[in-house]
Image 1 (tube, rainbow, N blue to C red):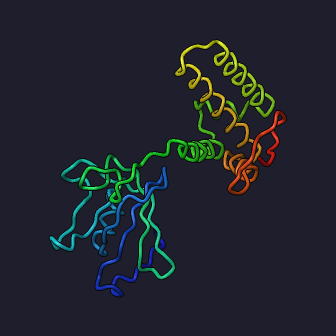
Image 2: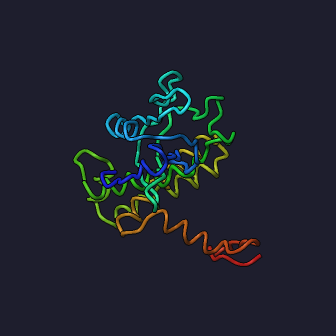
Image 3: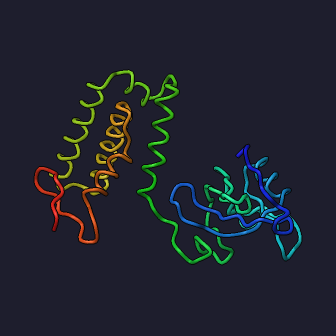
Length: 217
C-alpha cells in the first residue's frame, strides 16, 4: 500500500474504487476516492470515499454501522483505478443487500485460505504458547500422527449416527491438523485444491475411484 502512485488528475481528482471482500472474493460495491479520502482510509483503516453528490468525504458505515475494515489497496496497471480489499461488518449496499448487485456474500469454504495464511504466519513467527507452534516443534511424525488420530475420530463420529454438529467438529479438527502438516512440508491446502481441480477436468468432471484416483465419467 505504500507504493501507491495514483493519477488523480487523469479523471478530475477522483478515481473509481472497487471494493472486494478479502475473505470471499466477492465484489461488494464501487465508489470513488480522492487523495484525501484515500489518505483517511490508510490512516484509519476504515474505508472512506468521496461522495460526488454531497461533495464531501464519507466513511462507509458511519451511519449504518456497516464499516469496511481495510485489508489492502492496490492500483491497476494505469494507476487510475483502485482495488480495495476489506473485511465488511455487514451488508455493503445501502439497500441492505450484501453487495450492490444483490448477491449473497457467502463463501465459507474461502475461510480455508484465510486459515492457511494464519498457519503460514504461525510457522514463520513460531510464537510461544501457540498450539500450532507446539505442533510444528513436535515434528512431522507427530503431526502426521495427529492427522491420523483426527481421521479416526471423524470416522467414529460418522459411524455412530450421532449429531451432525459433532461430525463437523471432528472434521474441522482433521482439516486443521492436515493444513498444519502440509505447511510443515512447504505445501498448503491450495496445493490440494489444485490437485482436485486437475482431477475434476473439463465440463464433464470426474469420478473418484476407491483408490482416490480421478476417473473420467
